[in-house]
Length: 110
Image 1 (cartoon, rainbow, N blue to C red):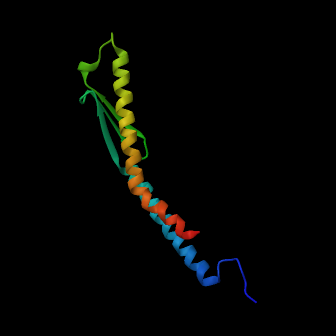
Image 2: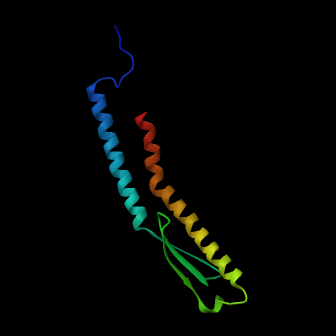
Image 3: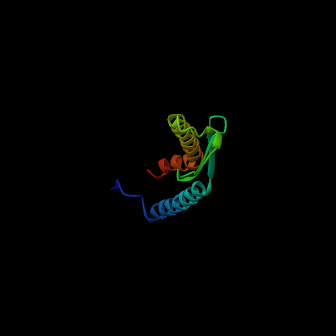
């Protein structure tokens, strides 16, 4: 009588466990790579520059003195927001590049 369900035997289960462990190691390496990656973005032709990690942790903000105008703080705020959003967009693209191939491998487990 045929059996249905399960993993199809101990060998198959062992193979799946090894594959899952390798994927976990690869995922950890990818996470570390993103943590170490620094992304620089600017706004206003370089008047505001931000640096973030690939995990979207803000590292630094540089503001050129000529953009500081006490009568137009709103413009400076807008430049900072634009630079940070640009950096986040680049970080998302980098995360997709690094993590994307790993996400595709999840389908092989199920």
